Length: 304
Ligand SMILES: NC(=O)c1ccc[n+]([C@@H]2O[C@H](COP(=O)([O-])OP(=O)(O)OC[C@H]3O[C@@H](n4cnc5c(N)ncnc54)[C@H](O)[C@@H]3O)[C@@H](O)[C@H]2O)c1
Image (cartoon, rainbow, N blue to C red; front, side, top):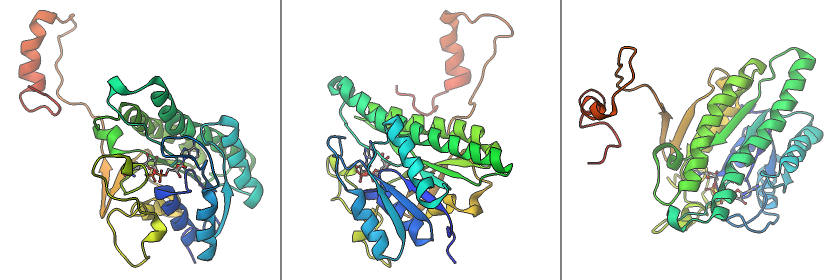
């Protein structure tokens, strides 16, 4: 008996890398998987049938999967992808939004097209599938009057949570993923749907674009009983658990899964605070008071 038996999942961008690892792991635990991938380059050009490779691996290992070649940033294409899951297997339980591209450079060298392309895949390519899945779950909930037990797992990154030089487009998108996850978790809780973000790390096509990065590994290159800290599938057990019924109490969380570590990110919280007793602040006096009572000398991120 698998922990995901009877579940139907969509994993976007599952033709390679981390998404392929998630699709393989979900199928291993019994889920039927729609393997989505546009099949373009790491910078988002072109298209292909890369999803077929992942479907082949899952079927070889005794699982069930179908390919989907939609561009997740195409709103109607995202709708067709959600419909494919429901038409093929009669339901949708899990949506993993993982598809991604990079177009790195310092902001002064980054073109508008580089910004727009990255935002389209990571932000619209997350929002649109979630929109269609949410509409599906809402109609099931209305029909049955029962919580639907759905799961959304989004994909963020250290760049969006703590910053990374050369990635103003990608970091903006990945910070947006975290904010979106928290808000969508509030909207879908009443339907019985949890929404959490995972921040993985692995040697994939995306990291291979960075100087000094290790060679690309695909998750099926790593034998199942072998540990490789850069295996794209290292975060997949966490995704499988978040996809399962066991995680029904966990929502709105941002969790990094880096090699053997699982790290709950705690995000923005109120820090030191000063108050001017119902009066407008005087800018010429603020510097001293902020230095003394707010920033001190050790506030994170201060650069003297
Ligand atoms: N590799 C890392 O260390 C790392 C770290 C943090 C976050 N991530 C995130 O993990 C996710 C997976 O990236 P990866 O590292 O496995 O890279 P990857 O290139 O191996 O996989 C990304 C997949 O997304 C697909 N894709 C791209 N645009 C698409 C679109 N519009 N529609 C459908 N599919 C599309 C690509 O074809 C590719 O197969 C991304 O969201 C990435 O930002 C990766």
